[in-house]
Length: 527
Image (tube, rainbow, N blue to C red):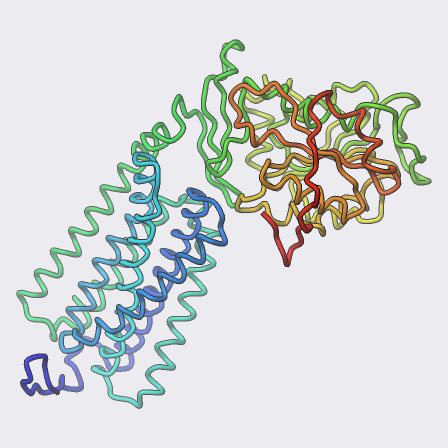
């Protein structure tokens, strides 16, 4: 073997002195491969999820993280070629640095976003550093496996990759179902870093300790302990750090902050006295969802146009339990999303409304709407009304169960705007087609959409058989203007969109462009 200076070196001897038999040692190394692969995939998913929350546009952010990560892994593999002669010590050092960088990556990105207003450069930097370190793992582990017992390269690679891929599966499942809901992103990344450091240190400092000089072992042990101490201190400071960062991001008093499988919810402002409700803000995945000063006006803007005017022209299907009262508003209302209860309150104020079904995927949002003192004041304790039935389910999937029933006179879609992590399917022709099949003949649907996607949404509603009118009412105080854009659409037999104009607030109707953009579908999503 030739080193970088051209000198000949002997290859590392086979049959390393090990504290356990060769078979057990090999199994332990493959277990380390499993753990390291799981940790590496968790780091990757943490970066993708956080980038989607902070920057938006999850498709772009996932593409950036994955492409940079794969490129960096190639660089790390090339770097590992220079470290094979000291594979054991190099692997321990790589794992210590990876545990430190990966464990602190979420804290770093969130800090950059909170105090500097952007995190793109930090995202690319963390992704590249983690990718280089992950890429160096497999060549070094391959060398360690061959140090235990020489075998053909194909067999060794197959064993190593099998453990690596199974570890990736476990890490990929642990992130959304265990780490994210139980620990959150920050603490979950720190816990992953601790596991990573312990696994890497145990392999070298115990299993391959005879291959590492005593002085180097001491340095590696000290480095590993230091990494664990840093991660432990970061975990102890995670609570105050999150609070300070949230104050920097959201301003004001953060009363509620929770992360579940659906989204991160942050509620700021005061719940009492009633005069302070205008300071209340509700954020979902760092997007302003609700402003206390605008809550009532927003609910009226969504609900009133669809619930005003005469009832649906055609009678409800035979056997329906409820019918629209003559000369009144719709009797049966479906609210998709709207777990804060603001739109629900406005719907219930209509005397003809006899039943409202609220379908929201986020149980935490529904719980806040029912129990938080501030939201309860804003929504007038709407969830306590006996006419209300709540369903915790994905609105898209739930509408499949209603397909063809034509059970609702009015549907109010208070769903995330286009561009959010979970919004694409709620702006698709497939979704609006399911909604149209759940509408009673002549029913109406009102949709909250952002200004950037309003005409695509209008074209999509039209393609689904729901000709729509766009409107943007006045009255907002603190909500961004672009969020106050709505569509009102006629039902499958509700006539043309022109018949909806009288129900739209005066002076708020938007002029469509000469040519509407193509509709949005699941396979061809449009911004």
